[in-house]
Length: 414
Image (cartoon, rainbow, N blue to C red; front, side, top):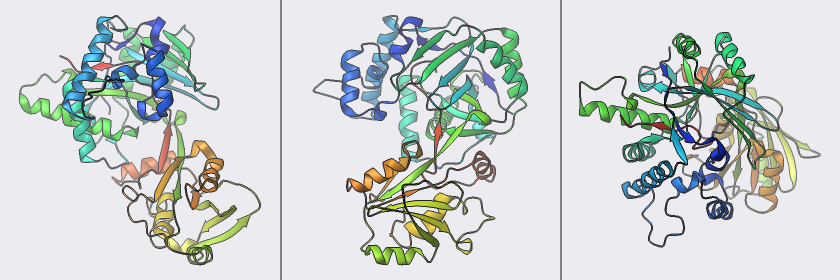
């Protein structure tokens, strides 16, 4: 079961919502980021980058930097750019992209659901990043970007969502990425109670994106609880910001690989070695894999189809039979000498939205020697791995929707 709560979001005024909301700063190319900061005084990027254009900057990921973030956040509130709702709501959020529509609920979710295993994970987190995000929460006292959670479709929740879709949204705007954004306030007490009750029967919940944010929220809550054994169980630190989207609305995209060299092998030697693990077929034109255990490979102006041989992996092992794992175990490690995907600088990752064309471009422009296209992981594979307390290889999935920062901010202040 999941314990969710409505909350009083800190959010932009209706007339400034499209100007405030932003993607994380690392998404933008430097010149685009600078242009946005120069031209838009309302963008949330000013909070994320509080010392833009300053000569004497604090160091990233330090208390001093996070204090600057908090100062800028408070300034946005003081200037009326951000306001806090007077009543507690759930928030219905929709993205309409050129290819998909994503609809889900923004709520608070109890950290205890993470601690007791009701929230399932499929990705390892790095202790250093967890501690950095916890430090951020200690200083800044707010969640600005929700963790993406997914759950089995529920008819009662869907009916309530559909009712609000017939009403005028609080926010309605389109971004330069051609994505339409809508936000509704779910303020009817009966609807809030019905949604809360339905989620109390849903078990388990799965993290789709935001493993580090959720883990750091748990660390933060544990530190606050340690300060006082008689802590208020309904205090804000016992919850974190979440965006719930039904499984049927989630979009799991593949993460492709590029490698900078052939580990000292000639092209002929490399192709010969991979035939131990794969059936290799040269293709006449650019292509993408259309089924599990098939890979596309681009090397020296040629496309190849690689079919994993059945005796080279364990089909009964869900992690072992993931295409990302098959490629690592049977090609990247033994042939190209790449043993750690997290640290080896020879390997790169490209999200599948960019398609085969992006892989070819990387090789043709000599930014990589060889590129591999993978077939995406299914929601059932993701769930089975999480249920079994197993972990996917790094960069196995690229999951949408990608959330914007600054639309609904969860305050950790008591």
